[in-house]
Length: 473
Image (tube, rainbow, N blue to C red; front, side, top):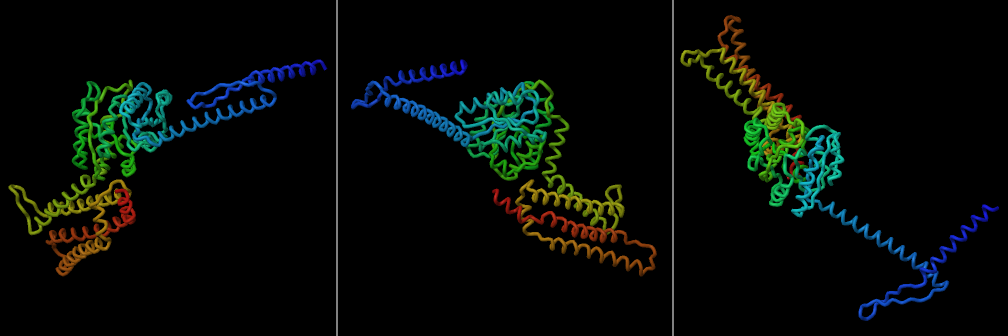
């Protein structure tokens, strides 16, 4: 009973204090009324019970209005932030794998460049499995982190680019070897109409110790020369790690590589698409990674050369195949009438036999090159307008007719020679040159027939893919 009495007294006391407080608050009500001069008058009036109720209502209304006002302000701020996100023009994408020592510098430079140039931009760090605190550093410095589960330089870049919100993408390494304060130079070229903007370290500056001597004077110049010779890209620094391109171009390119070849694939496909490519001078600084670089000189150099050859079937297949075919065919026709003598060297039927082998080998290489070209086109590795026109015109039946005609010619000639030999009682045979000549055409015809079938199988969806390319142009 005593405990209950004390609880009731304490409750009553709290209620009394609350009522007294409300009475003090309700003593005066500030009434703002606009006068004719725009001034506000303050009046006070005593309050009774009704006044107290009004004060309570007024307090509730004020709190409610304040909450609504705060909510409206927050909502407006959210709307502004959402609008800013939707209006991102440029995204800097930085692939990252344990780059804690240098990543913060790269992010700060990019964001400062955005701010000073008045560019609406973002920094996207594409992490490839870092374990050294790179993710925390990226978040602290204001970058947006995305995770690339597939390992590889190209995989990280592809993930970052796909997640980027900007219309224009600038990519660069996370080791602070590239100066991200130069991002506005790339943006200016984009606004001038370029869809691919390449950095050029040789037109800019290579700081002492920033690039190995072998890369500077041999590897990069040779790779760049081959790239320009094969694909007419017209760039001066094929492997510059800082470059910019439009999101639209990236979607048209549809990259497939996941390693260091990614950088070459962008340039090769952009050149094949015929888009405007420009260059800006950039500075290469010694990196801050404090460890061995991911790039392996000879291994990645060979991968680059191999990739370019695979994307250039004319150089890998058609040129050597055509050379062998013409050389072999020339030897066969040259030696068909009889032995030939050049200086002190005699060329006879044995050389003619090698000529037939060269011609057949060249034909097989050319056929493989055609398979590669059709496959690359059908799989959208490489748009090829001349091949597209050829696919539209040439039909399977035309290849079959040509191959069958050559095979029948060779078979008829060989049959005629066999008949003559049989008529002579299968004795001594002196028509080896004619056998080589007619056999060559029979084998060539058979190769053309079966190659035509295979090309037709590869290009079975060529109408669809031609349509796809038309939509992308």
